[in-house]
Length: 401
Ligand code: ACO
Image (cartoon, rainbow, N blue to C red; front, side, top):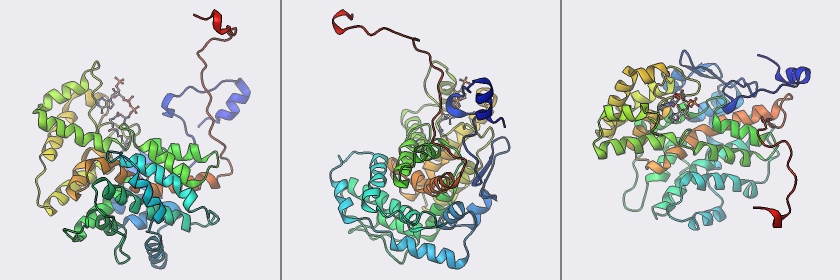
């Protein structure tokens, strides 16, 4: 790697790298990716092992602290997550004032930003796993479920101390006065895996937003809120919702797979095959492989056939054989099958990206923490290649046309 600061001092040159595809913006010991070989590891542990053996809470601990917890540490973490799970009653009033069709990602970003005002004590941030991090991880789940309950006009289901992190979320989402929710351990496991797969992905768009906003030394809640906003976009976390909408449209309009591939190839058509392609992976996304297997497991469990899975499988098969996709190294990413898993869990489509945000939170926290502790880090402040006029005279308003 070239030390660009030294180069700038010596030559006056600055780099031009739109989208920062070739810029190392920080040093990080959290997540390792090899985009050519399709490798993803958190703190050195392969994603496949974590998806098979770990839980979301344990993986969150691993990312944030840098090592797996002992059994006492894991118990304490779970106890604290339960203790922090309630949301300040005054924050509930916010939900009532949103229009019913408000997107839950916008609500979530606002709620997390508001936490700075409701939980201002931020004195413990030097501890490796502290109450601020745990408060965030616990409350984001409650806030997400609350926004769903408000949107469908149901009473809020409060968190239950006897349930684990993932079971609690499902219960808060789906338990109601008419039909009590039965927590199914296989679906709880599926949700654990779903969130483990999303927990970190080095310097992606939302994590970069967290680091960039955090670099101004704003409070952690506001930095995470910026990450949630960045994640909302359809080229990033919003892709899981966009994939399902695309598959639904193909299903409804009776479009053939060939027509769909042709549309994606057409340079005049803005249509892209959502859930395909990745800035770093030039092969199959390892998370996508695990997610694909999860579709079968979860659909078998809920005893449902999903016609969208069949369309997705046929689309994947056709795209992998197609020269356009081959030449550009476009493979399914994590989002391609994620929506099918979420639908099977009963999650409504407009909550898909919220599910991603809950999963990504430990990664954002870990990256923010690493940034704050890095003596080399500076406020993020890129330069530009100026393309405007060099100098213009001011024209009085009565002489302008
Ligand atoms: N369908 C059709 N063509 C595509 C697709 C796609 N899904 N993805 C990329 N391409 C084409 C582009 O048109 C471009 O063609 P060109 O070289 O002829 O101009 C080429 O492949 C490279 O694409 P870029 O957009 O330049 O690649 P970049 O690394 O900037 O973007 C991205 C990556 C945003 C993920 C892109 O592949 C995409 O838009 N995919 C669909 C959205 C999606 O699934 N996003 C989720 C990503 S994973 C995540 O965030 C969790």
